[in-house]
Length: 196
Image 1: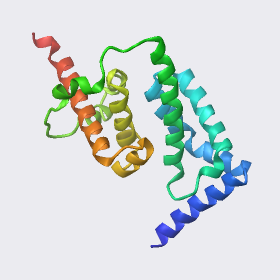
Image 2 (image 1 turned 60 degrees about the vertical axis):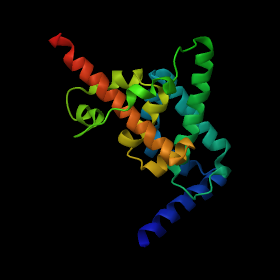
Image 3 (image 1 turned 90 degrees about the horizontal axis):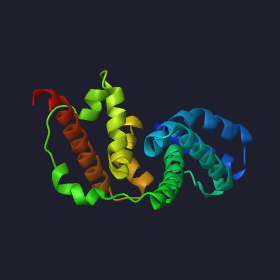
Image 4 (image 1 turned 120 degrees about the horizontal axis):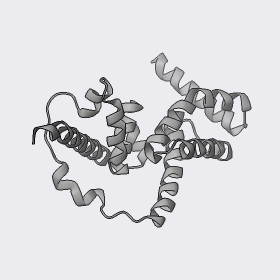
């Protein structure tokens, strides 16, 4: 029970500090969250320079809208939701310039692959396939990539991911499952290429 009180106290302290524009608190938050924020944006956007720019824009939004954080959820979830919205805006602008041919829903039937054992994400992250995994993640549709990153890289629960994404829990579960299936398929295809 004291853990909940401590967590509530921390989020309430952050909420109060943001309302009061506490620069020390903001510096502490940047120090604690910047690496995860840039990493998250880098995987969403795919370019280091844009990810860093969006991270800075995220912190500006935190300053501008600090009074909107009420402390009822963890700060990092609120931060990721802000960053996500900025990334979506960026990707929409980029998409207007270059239209993509297919949507994730067009490929649903090929993504439902049952599996056993560790996911490709988990297996590759623990091996020398990390570079290959990063490349495969960039190929995934953004909806799946984002859900996988929040779950396995940021270690958020399904309910927390649903909060960040503003999506139902069933949608989050489906995106993770389909993203893992797409990764598994990509890794299996890559592994079988020498046997044809």
